[in-house]
Image (cartoon, rainbow, N blue to C red; front, side, top):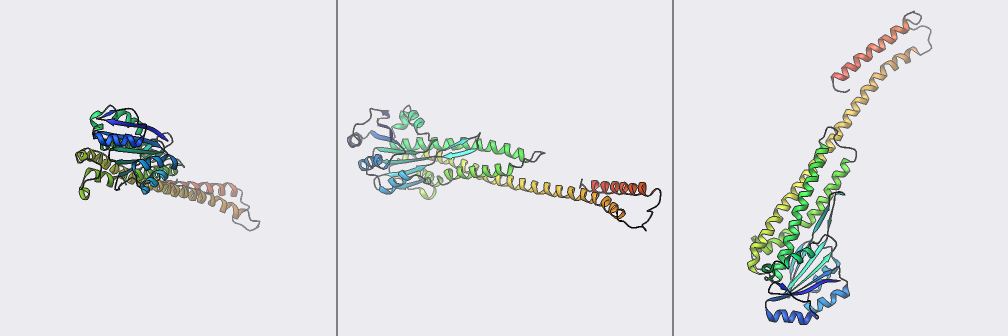
Length: 331
């Protein structure tokens, strides 16, 4: 559905258009205006009107309707198509959730399509309407403000994930070594880092292209060259986020390996203890088994002190075995 629609003239919002065609024609004629339409999970029928009025490419329209896209930037004859993936993090449940935000930029218009939760679009529009200097840059200013808000939120999520990982690391390397469900928690955390990585990693190339860096030094249609320094700032923040994500991924893998090694050592210790106690139990069992056999001619069978002597020998052997195992760290 269409959640917001307005014409912005010289950096200020005006009344919403009654007809998209007339509003777009007016914005193009004035030169200092542009039309911004925001949609949330539109249906095919709802999007057909926008597609027809703005001449959007059918492949981009298909991507915008179906969602489940990687962050990307595609250039068509009459528009620029950008996909961003805003993310949210629930620290209590340890879940990273991502939405999708598509932008169509063209001559004097911006169409934004949002899927899922966690999009900063509403807050960005409200903030932009108080930043008239940015809005005066037209669709380029809108693209910059949205990309900047999405990447800044990546920084916050990366910080929260880093804090939770430190707590998980402290638990693993505590004297107790973590509980039986620690490995499951570590693996679940790694999956959340991977979900976060799917949003931040692929965005590096589109942002470098908007910033005009490296092999992407050429201009991008419908984006003003004067905006490159601002996109470089966003790209710098994104680079730091991707480095943080790489570090989180490596660290959580190391923590999982350390935890599994601890579990293996603990199991070996348990097996040594079990073996030591079994050996200590085997000695009196063997002696008692021998003297439990029903034979008349056995050593010291009819001796008065036979029973105390056997018990004493058992006790002495148990003490020797216990001290030997204790000295070797098996008990």
